Image 1: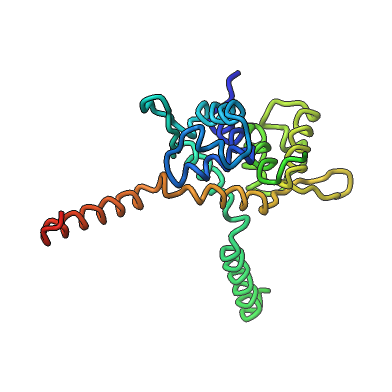
Image 2 (image 1 turned 180 degrees about the horizontal axis):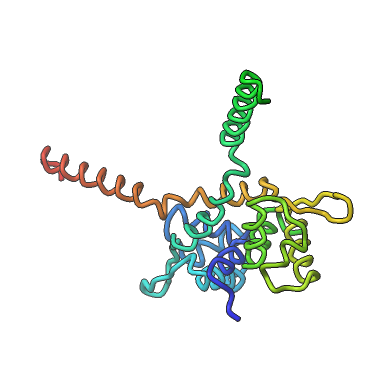
Amino acid sequence: MLPDRLSTTYAALADPTRRAILARLAVGEATVGELAEPFAMSLPAVSKHLKVLERAGLIARRRKAQWRPCRIEAGPLKDAAQWLEHYRQFWDDSLVRLDEALCELQIGERRETGNG
Amino acid sequence: MLPDRLSTTYAALADPTRRAILARLAVGEATVGELAEPFAMSLPAVSKHLKVLERAGLIARRRKAQWRPCRIEAGPLKDAAQWLEHYRQFWDDSLVRLDEALCELQIGERRETGNG
């Protein structure tokens, strides 16, 4: 069974080097050589990471003379972010505080009306 | 080398069953038995997924008589979402449109002042 797209995206993001490559590409297009520079990594090692990112649809490469600059592709990042958005209620302090405030308000009202 | 926390989080999310378990837990606490029910999966298979989620800090379990209900832990989900937030510029249409509008405005101004 082929993994679904969201699983492929998260699996591709589950590596610090691949996330650093995406961070570099967020600044602008870059070739394999330019991407390899800050990592003290061989070109084949970087190419392997790029292949994972390309297969996940997180980057695209275009032909430009001999070199093939890479750029970020937004689609899968957007889907991954949107899936996580559903869980915002669990970490959004302002929502938690609003919920607590509403609860206290309800408790107060119940006490006042003698139903608490 | 131990994987970093963000990598562990994304690796744990790179599975449709584990994401479905988190979606179920978003509704409220559940025991292993309750979690196994909708998946036509054996308890040991579900337990294995829960261990991955627990190791990644995405769920916590508490002792309650014989059973140990699971609940979502927000921290790693928040970090995973925040990392993706940095890339919002690549998919947020409103930002892209704003950028295009500003460019057109600049081009128009240059034409008017004869600098374009």
